[in-house]
Length: 138
Image (cartoon, rainbow, N blue to C red):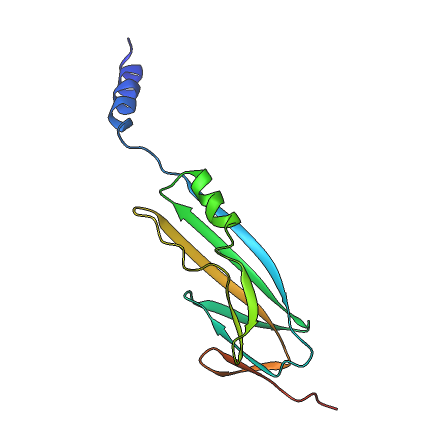
């Protein structure tokens, strides 16, 4: 047996105990319609997000989810369980929040969530996560 083949076999045997964990990733897009009479709303998020203003009339959410240290089936369960879906509700004030953010985190699983929100340009950022409709210009 040649030394290069023997070195290759030894390397493979040495690396066998180190399991490579896959990283799963998916980008989810969602549109949230805003009522025509809406003048203000706030955003409730446990994750930081980037805001981009655009000329449309709906809020568009682009959520990029990455997860490692778990099986693909667990990752897919998190995706289909509405963990990353958003809804606009009226709780005294209009509030944009996630549908099912209270799902527990799994031990030894790394989850990264990056959110980009496209907000209609006629809303302006007022306070921390509060947006107010500005009057239309003539």
